[in-house]
Length: 129
Image 1 (cartoon, rainbow, N blue to C red):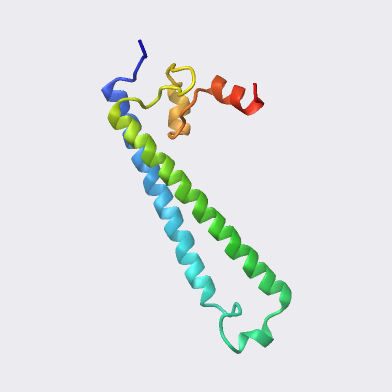
Image 2 (image 1 turned 180 degrees about the vertical axis):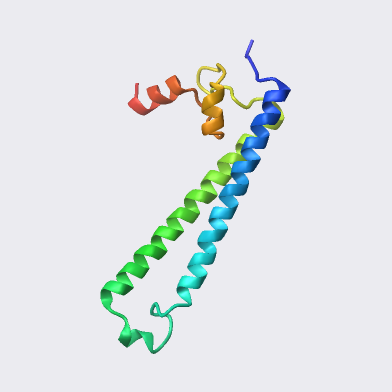
């Protein structure tokens, strides 16, 4: 028989996940706002900025924009993983390792709420064993 976390623990995990989702949403919104304000600066987006902008500045701006897109994508992916974790909380399968079907240690779930594998299975997977 597969062990499961109690309803009380699942509610605690649900609260943690929902809090993390709020933080991720705020972070992604802040990045979007930063990208919007950055594009309004003299960053090559105005006709007269073409001649006054140094190539190195344009490269830096481009790099920052790429970095922001990467961070937004990362945040979106994390948010989706948290949504999947919420579904698992609601169906009672949250906290069960997908490989060995043992309970994932509570401390791991608090730190990595979208974890689907216990530490030993994750390490084995990373090592390719």
